[in-house]
Image (cartoon, rainbow, N blue to C red; front, side, top):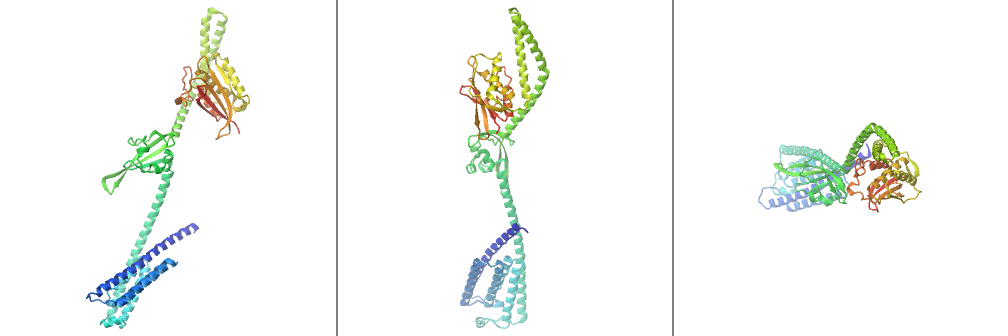
Length: 565
């Protein structure tokens, strides 16, 4: 038997004792009320010509005073002392049988009209002290009643009864008959009161158990309602919010005391409850101004009102869920499926076109060299062969981009100078025939900045960013600025930030999340893979790339590469 069980039993015992003390106080009060009413009845009958035996008024007042004094003293003792309530109850039951015996003895014994007063302690003892209380009171009443019958049989009666000419039972059999009938009645009442008390007690235990189960279920329901991840809002038939759990408040940002009791449409006007009950979604603006993607559904509840069929109380339960992350995962899954399709397509393209294109490019290069040596007579052939060579090389570069995107390599990181890598990129870019002579690249960071990355992959990143910026610069006055510095982000260590800014038209707000997706491009000659490859490489380096507006009026691409601790 562990300590917690003992404490639980001790708490139950203390509660039972408190209830019994309260009931005993009521017993003392009822005793006072009973004998007060009996004195009033005695006064009423004493003033009329009824053939009943009553106490003299002086004796009745003394008797009533004794009852009051005993009851008040007992109540004070019960409240002030730590006496056992059961022991106190047995004593009070015996005291009540004694009071009843005195009353009956003074009002005619066998001819007394107050014999039924014995049932007060018998029934009270049976109810307050099950099993034993009623039987003890019945036994005491039987013995005391037998005692006063014995006194009556031998003429031991109050003097005022003799003066009134009282003649009691003088026959032994008559007294025995009175004793037997009353005693049997007393014990029968005691047994019935005990059975009734046991039935009441079992009912109370069952009710107490039901209440405990109900409280436990209520607590469980409250915990589930408050801790479930899905937001739940209940609405009455008038459209007012009756309850909202913690998840609903976290999702919407509204505190419970603000929305409960208010109209649902006032705070959730975007939610259409007249639509079908299937899961729906909408854009929802929280209290803090943040817009989330909110998934919701609703169901109607019907409760019968007072058992009358056809009369129902319509209520609704609305479930809420922030599905912003779920939709983001769905987009990522679609992106992954798209990437898988790109990989399969790229492998086919590489297999079917790369080798023939290499042969075409090589043959076109031979023709260009031959036609360039023959002079102006083959100028047209030279230009056509040059077109074939240029376009073949462009298709080879496109296929290479597909292969880079579909089969990315793991970065082989090392320390190297960012300025040195950028110089190689600029040198290769300016050597291309398509590079405009008017383009100006301004490098604004020092040679002391080193980065921890894959040099070949960073070459690809910088090359794509410069080519992308150049494509949107105004012809004849192309300007690109490249800067880099070391910063410290709050949620990570040291980070290298690389910015590439151009003086083009910039990127619109709605396209800033789309330009890094595969095949999204606004260029007529673009494949839509350059920036997708850039983001893929930066992500493999545990970095991040963003785009916003620069000081030159065009787009500014920000690359963040973490440094090792």
